[in-house]
Length: 255
Length: 250
Image 1 (cartoon, chains in turn brown, orange):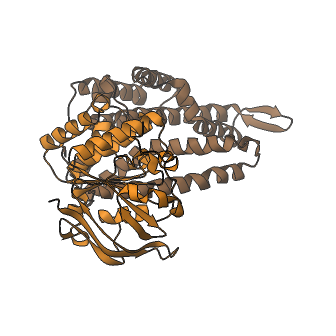
Image 2 (cartoon, chains in turn blue, orange):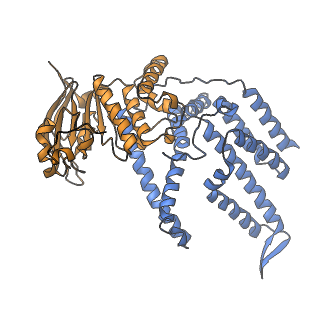
């Protein structure tokens, strides 16, 4: 049985999963803009709302943390770098090495914002089918005159979201195979990244080749007619999500 | 009288990088046959299969499907000849079982109702309808192969081509898949199946082709070829080695 990451699409009996994908995109864009202005209190409220959605979507927090462990390293790195580069009240961490309190606070805020956006991406990825996303992208691009190949843009965006969980799954496979040969003992981070990246890229491109052949053998072509093109199903929960997002955005930007 | 569905006329295909490929292969396939294409790894079985629905074009020679040249009727060839690949994971396109099975008929431009009807029927026939909303990655190996068959059945092919279908399957998965293949054959589909382990399906095959180093070296009823297969790197079934009649694999 294959592994399914927390980012993989699943079918759940929860409003988020039945939501019109255009509504999800509008909510995510609005909240993402609001988050750039968010302070700790706002981030706390937004994170609480996102964690509730994650819980109701039957996603497992511990598994999410495990799958995003490198992302958490990056957030930690941001905090440290901000600590070293922001001027303010110095705190000695070792002999003559100082970081600033303001830098740490600033870094923590930036990292928390990134984390909130990651959680929104996770919720979107696990609850949205790539076909619906493609239709939504085409719908949003329709009024824009200078993009001639709207369908191609839609396909590209949907393929990216569709294959991101697969790439993560392959990365996890490669990492496990290397750990079983004691790769964790390798201290040089460049070598570690190279050891993972080379087989991962080979695997991804090889799989992509096989997938293209399989799609072609089932008559796929770029001008594939869509059975449900421009067909969006409303769940009836959209208004609640619009109001909730508007309240959160207003609270974050103006209060 | 049975009619020829596929006619392969002296095709060759040489890979420029390795110099290997297919050399002067000719045979025809009649409606309702169950053909095993046997040969060791790298003998050219997969290359041959990819010519059958126009995924590869021969360097010389031609392939006719119902009398139509594949190279100029690719869409027709892909509809008539359904292909199941060795690596089930790499041919899954949909995010749910239903979406994946519906991929082929959607490409054919069928109506929403027709796509739904065909997909529901194919999933039910292959015992996957209760899994229709599941992510295909959560299926077992045998279920993934059956999903691949369902994805091809929705296009209503005459011929189903299976490239090493039993690779990496456990006993239960192999058994389920074999039942599905036999059911397809009984329902009137012509089966062409490649394998290097002929034991599992030899009992049901009506004909066996042996490919060796890109050449078709034998084409006959399986019982006449069994004693010669080891010359070409294929294992002779146990029963044949022991001088017994071939039995159905269970």
